Length: 272
Image (cartoon, rainbow, N blue to C red):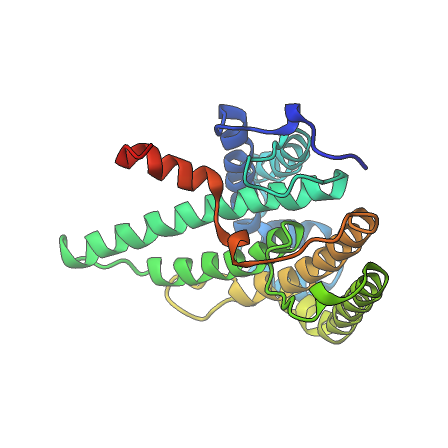
């Protein structure tokens, strides 16, 4: 693992930094929407396949292209992701995965806003509200809430109380860090252990929301919680390893101030 060099810092969002998350999101979304077709292809359970076959069509060429594209754009996105100036500087190979997931989450936030604006326009201007915007917004918000936790862990921006931590000697701080990571690992293990059965069943039978739009919210969010919590635990271990020999940091209220943002505001108001 290595630190992010100057070449890894993207001062302005380039085309590649926008294209990779957007293309991955589009391909992954389409592949997920057509997931019952892939379940019918790869699942050997007869009753489950028969139940899915009565509701969904077989996978077509577009679905397969989307599935392959999601994998390709994920790999390319992780390989080409660049750190923004305000992001955490020290990162390794797994941090690239978390940062790219963060970029995808940002794309989902933009898409969620577009869906909500469209629904407001259709409901109050055209007076023809949609049947899908509310459930789609709920579905996307669930993914945003879950995925943002991984990015927050990588950026060390999750809620932490430093009142006692900062006055401890570095050796005792390391003990606290190990205990914290151990608790995260224990939580992830027991959550996965207890939730795997229900999550896998909801996924295999492609349980839907039961509305007019009928999105597969239970079938997708339940397994996604287990996957992301596992990734958060791995990221916590990666953070512990990378921060092990770091110099102790004294935290204050000034940590929440972005100097680049302050300088930009100063230029806007013409301050010297």
